[in-house]
Amino acid sequence: MKARFLLGTHQPGWLTTAGVPLFVSDIRLRVYKTLPRADAPWALDSGGFTELQYHGAWTVSPTDYVARVRRYRDEIGRLDWAAPQDWMCEPVVIAGGQFGPLRFVGTRLSVAEHQRRTVDNYLHLRDIAPELPFVPVIQGYTRDEYLACTDLYDQVGVDLTSAPLVGLGSVCRRQATAEAHDIIHALHVRGIRNLHGFGVKTLGLQLYGDTLKSADSLAWSRDARLKRRPMCGSTRHRNCANCLDFALDWRTRLLGGPGSLSQLRETITGGAA
Image 1 (cartoon, rainbow, N blue to C red):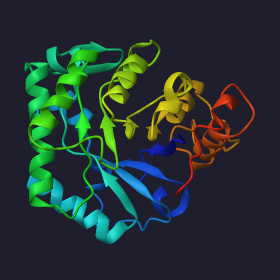
Image 2: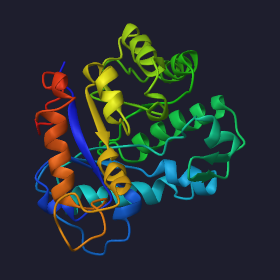
Image 3: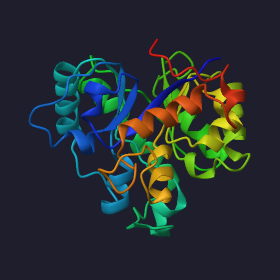
């Protein structure tokens, strides 16, 4: 199976110029009065991580979100799919606290409640906007919790095995372990093989990139920020955390260039098809 790679970006203007599939957040797009016109397929991040990090709940109504997604589809064009307003299940998202430099207010809800709200939101979005390409997302933290979330979809008549794409939430921060691979394997056993990995870093792609249908990553921006100097040779910015040239070069090296990820050439194409 060949996984399709979407380059994550903070810069919606790249939709016009990058020429490769992008993953762009609603949080970045919603402030635009005039939207860019896409020159390649792209997908929409709902911004759920930021919503729950800062607010401990969704502050955007499904009606408002649908209106914006419809606008993006019509004005930007080439929208492949959009994430729902799902609820991540990492312990720090629920309990609150510090994770590296990030501070979370905490939702103070259970994993089961996060899963119920995730499924309910997908159903609601699908009901009020059946013409928009929302994808279901499986949420959880342990292997059994992910399987329990698939049961919730089964109970409401959503067949994840036949969905064009199914998002896999809350695994990106554990990709240095075998847990993510075990979770994906368990879902494959259930017949769910059309998975999208959110925020997968290069190590995660090494470990389980060949088990995904698609993946997105913003790891290039973090890498550039850690370098603390421009890597593209430019004298116009302090580092390459928002540099298209660096991002495209990182993508090229990830997908097919020489280096430590060359073993992924047969499993990650990054193509637009």
